[in-house]
Image (cartoon, rainbow, N blue to C red; front, side, top):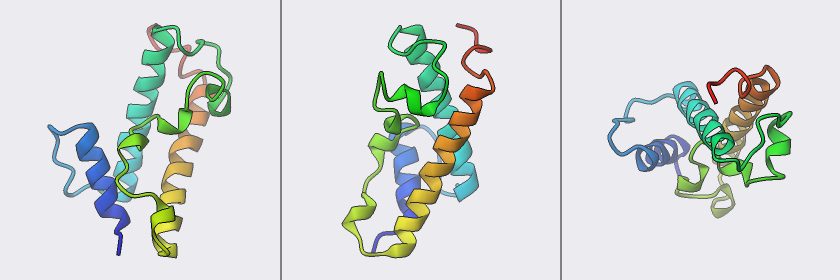
Length: 116
């Protein structure tokens, strides 16, 4: 049986192996991933991959696979690999919260207020 929190900690550790995420909570995981995602977006803006005036999270998909921001490509198990409804719900709630938070950051001028 897959454990969402174990997978979250594994994903965080793969993306940043120098940190100890053993005590990370769901909410702290969201904070970490949102911070990482916004840093990655700013990096892509600086590289010219994403325009600085992108209006929202959804528009990022015109330039990149925005679902991968924050380290999602390090996720060890996809919800489709389990029939565990609790795991699937936690996975969706986590990533929806991350993307909604990043969307609000973009709409509030987060990219524009960054030192590009």
